[in-house]
Length: 64
Image 1 (cartoon, one colour):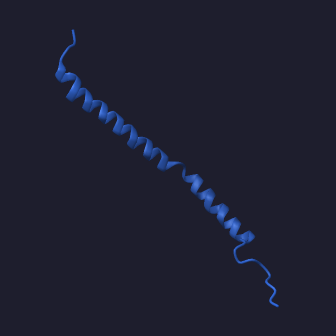
Image 2 (image 1 turned 90 degrees about the vertical axis):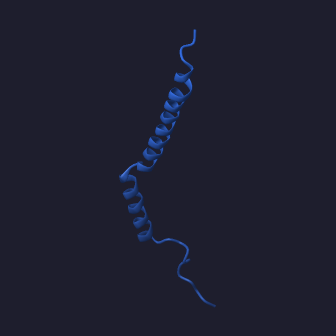
Image 3 (image 1 turned 180 degrees about the vertical axis):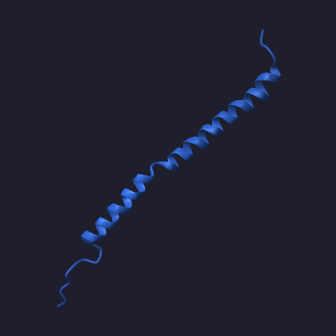
């Protein structure tokens, strides 16, 4: 009968420490991707507003 010391799927303490260091390094960089998504979506909304303003609202003229 074979006796196994450890389950190969169970991470060791050094693996967990390395993983914690990786997570902390990622968190130190900040939410750059989220800011990029916010910037792009804001640009799209503002562009749609100006397109509507210049091509739909202004050509109609003043409403009396």
